[in-house]
Length: 423
Image (cartoon, helix red, strand yellow):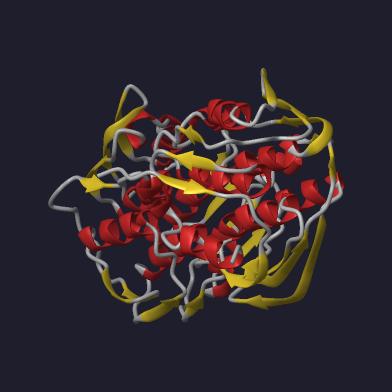
C-alpha cells in the first residue's frame, strides 16, 4: 500500500550519519562474488536496490549471508539462474550484472519493475556484444536475454555513452572472464569500481578518461563502506536553505567523482566545510559540516553536473533559494532515470512558486523566495524526488509526497533521520 507523508520547515542541527554508499555496496557485493574466500562487507546500504543485487548474485550461485548492515560474501563457480533475474528498480543491478554474465559465460534473463523496464539497456548491451556476448533486448529495454562468452573478442572499448555503470559492466566482464580490459573516452564518471579493484590487488590504472585493467584482483579483503554522499546531499541542501541550521554529517564518502554538489553549492555561497578527511578501503571519507547561508545563482558546467548527476534534483532545490538564475547543463540523461527528473524538478519547484525552464540539454531555474503551503508532490515512485521534496520543505514550508515507500530504494531511515535533525 502506497502511503503519503508530510514535511515541515525547520532548521537542522546536531550530528547525524547516513547509510552506506549504494554505489559502493553494489560493487563490493559483485566483486565479493569473485572472492575464493569469505569477505565481510560492513555498513552495506540497506535499500531495495542493493537488495536486488544481493538476491541476483545469490541466484547466480554466490554465497551471501547478511546480519544487519553486514554481509559475508564468497564466490566460487557461478551458474545460470533457474529463473529470470528480477532487478526490481535498480538499473545498477541490471547493467553491471549483465557484465558479470557476459564475462562468466552465463545465460540469463533480466527483468524489473515497470519503471526499470522503461529505462535504456541498449547502450550497455551494444558494448557487451562487442565483447562477444549475445544479448536480445525488448526494443532497447527490459526484459532482455543474455548469453555470455568464453571467447572474448574486443578488449579495448571506447565508451559511446560515458557512464559509470557501462564502464563497470565492461570491467566486471573482464574480471569474471579473467581477461584484461581497457575502457576509453570516459568523462570523469564515478570510479568506485576502479578503486575497489585496486583495493583488492588488481593491476589497474585509471584517470578521468581511461581505465586499464591488466591483471585480476588477487587479495580480497573486508570492506567498510563509506557513508553515501548522495544520501547526505539532501541534508547538505536542507541545512543550507533552512535558516538557523548547523549540522554535521559524519563519515561520508567524498570521492571527487561524486562531490560536484559541494563544488556547485560553494560557488553559490554555501557555508560547507569538509573536515577530518581520511581514506578507508580506497575511498576518501570525511565529516561534512553545514551552516545555513544565502545563495546566488550560477552556471553549473557539464563537468560539475556529471559529478552531481544523482544530486541534480536537490541542487535544483538549492537553486530555488538562490538570487538570480541558475543554469545546469549536460544533464540530458535525467530524462531517463527512475522517472523524468527534469519534469520532476519542474513539478517540485512550481509548487513553491519558482519558475523552471527546460533547456535542450539542461534546465534554468529562476530563484528567489520559495513558499510552500502544503502541496502534495507527485514523486512517480522516484526516491530522489521524494527526498528532494523534504529538503525543499525544510526551507520553504509544508509539503507532502504521494509515495513514502519509494524512499526505501536507497535510504529506509531517511524520514526518521530528518526528524531527529529538526527536533
